[in-house]
Length: 406
Length: 139
Image (cartoon, rainbow over all chains, first blue to last red):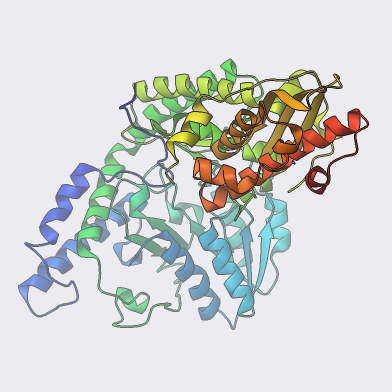
C-alpha cells in the first residue's frame, strides 16, 4: 500500500509523453543548431524541425502554421496577448473585459495594464462558474478593444460558451482572446470556428515538455498584431524575440500530434473514470458537493467540497500516495481560500474544503479505485476530528456561533 | 514542505480526540478560530477542583495537519499539569516540538489560545477570578 504513487494533478502539469521525449532527444546534441542560423546545415535542420512542429500544432487547432508564435509558456502568451494588444490598439481604445475566475497570469497582467492607464472590467460568474452573456455585452463600450475569457477553468474545468462570446465580440468589432491552457490537446479546440483571435496555451499541460508554449494570433479576418514584449532579434515575425527552444518545440509538436490522434479516446476513457470517482465519493460521503457546472466542463476534472473538512489537512491523510490539489491555502501568508471558488459564490468554509482531482493520459482505473478508498477513509478520519462536523451532526447552527477570527 | 516525524505521528494518531461534557462545571472549553479561516480548534480540560490539576484533556480540530498536531500535542502536555502550569505553555514550545515551518506558526498560536480559552472558561464557571495570562488570550 505504501509504495504506490498516484498522480491526479494533471491540471498543474502533465508528465511528458515518452514519445515526445524521444522526438526531442536528437535536438540536444546531434542537431544543436539555432533555428535562426540561416547559413549552415545546423541552422537549417533546426529551422526545419521548428517548422514541422509549428505545422503539427497548427493542425491540432485547424489554423495556419504562420499563426503560431512560440513562447516560453502560457503565462508569457497571456502577457503578450493582453499587453501587446493594449499597446498596439491604443488609438482604438483602452478598455479590456475579462473574468474574475481567470488565471493569475491574466488577472495580474490586467492589473498592470490598469496601472498603465487601461481600464479593465472583471465579469462575475454564476454558481456554475459560467459568465453571463448579457453582462458581457453590456460591458462593451466604444473604448473596448479586447475581451479575454479562459476557455476552461483550471480549478473547476468549467468550459465557457466560447462561440456565443465570439459572436458578441464579432458583432461589436472587439478582439477576442482566450487563455486555452487547460483545453488544447484535451478537447477539440478550433479558434477560428468560435471567433477567438488570440489564444495562449502551453506544452506541459498536454504531455509535452515544460518551458515552451505558443500564442495563436489570427492573420486573416481580422489580421491581428501585438506589440512585442520581449525585444531582441525579431524572432517569431517580430512578436517574440529570443532564440527558439528547439528541443522543447519539437516535443511540443509531437505532443500536439499525439493529442490530435488520441485525445478523443483519452477524453472518453477519462470522463468515465472521473464520473466513477465523483459518483463514488458523493454517494458514499454525505455533505459532499461538486463545484461548478457539471455539463459544460472538461472530461478529466472534478472539484469536490467535503463539508467541515479542511482541504489541506485532508490531503495530508493521503499525500504520500496520491497527488491532488486543494482550494485551501492555509498558510500565514494567505489564509484566503481559492478566489475562483469564492467567485462561484461558495462560502469560504466550502472553498477551504475543496479538492481538485485532474486525471490524465496515464491514469489507470486501479488508481481511481485506490483514490476512492483513500479519500473515503481520509474524509471520515478528518470528520471524526472536526468540531464543526460534530456541531453540524448535533444540529448546531454554525452561523449562530461567534467565531474568533484570527 | 516536509513535515517532522512527530508532527506526522500526531496527525495520523491524534491523542485525546473527543468531547467532554461542557455542561459540567469541572470542564472548561476553549473554541478558537473560524471556519472561514480554515481553522477551528476546540480544546477541553477537566479539572480536579481539590488539587487544581488537569485530569483530562480532549480536542477536536478542523484544520490542516499542523493545526491538528498542535492541538493533539497540547492535550498531551495538559494532562497532569496544574492550571497555573498549563498557563505557562507557550506556542513556541509547540513550534519547537513539532518543528513547525514558519507558515504554520499560527497553528501553534491557535493551540495556545485554545488552552487559555479553556482555562478562562473553567475559572468563570467556578467563580474563580480569571488568571491574567488566560484573560489576555481568551476571546
